[in-house]
Length: 395
Image 1 (cartoon, one colour):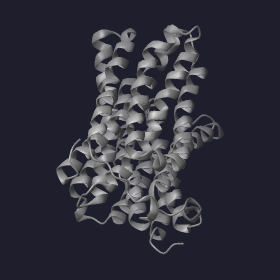
Image 2: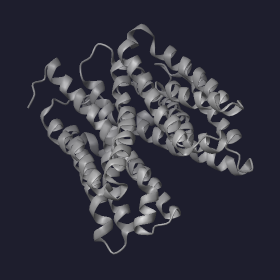
Image 3: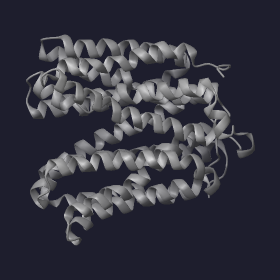
């Protein structure tokens, strides 16, 4: 067991970095294989789309349940269990579709297992880092969340390289290689010092938290942060290909991959230089840039400018999610695990609701993605209006 010194807690933060890389693996590896699943197992894309809903649905459920059980069971047991579930789910993804009579049932079972791990990681790593001693909590939180972005890029690039060198049909081998990341983190989290952000005796009761106007402002901020991010991210590849007329390869690299890279860059930059710029000012600037990026992507007729808008949108949303966590920690320090879990729930609702709104709006605009995607700017606009009200005393 590492000692509870500043050096010891530095390892705690490193383990949390690996935790977010693990979450990036469980969220983004399987979607790279959707067409492969259709070809190998004869599962239609309509059924495969259920896997996405199942993944985030289970994570939402875990977010909700964690409000009650995380403090009772203990952070260490929960975060170690999260990585056990993530590793087991990736192993199940490699094995169960071939072992069960119905391959789709195997895929669903694997997704449920690793989604439990992903949901727990989402709830726990932010308060663990918030509780670790550091000079600038907001910068530490921003740097932490950048590792999900780096993990996303890492998964795309490494998986693409593996498929090119070894063949996509050998994807189960890659799934087993990816599970080594959460497996290693099981042992890392078992050794590092961990303390909760607020002592159980000092936490606001759930009922009192839910009666605070401040909490619901924070809830809406987190929902908008998730929606602003994923409305562009989830549709970036399709938008680049169909809306801007570029090839699929260019669309994938200039869409979700570059979006994730620039989002990670924004978080890393604030993590290193955050002390020079107040958190809410940085978030307000990010919201303004996000609005400009949506306008640039959707209103320009030039593909290069449209791609620039997509890419810079990743940079603009980078601060919104971790920044909201930090604002919550500053303005409602007694919120504890329940607050972090409910904010994670709000973020996941936004991640699902934003892209869904864009998809539904596409039908209203005759299948045109550009005007539908323009609706995504409503979320950073709402955040910009709500930010001044996220302060102590909003009860």
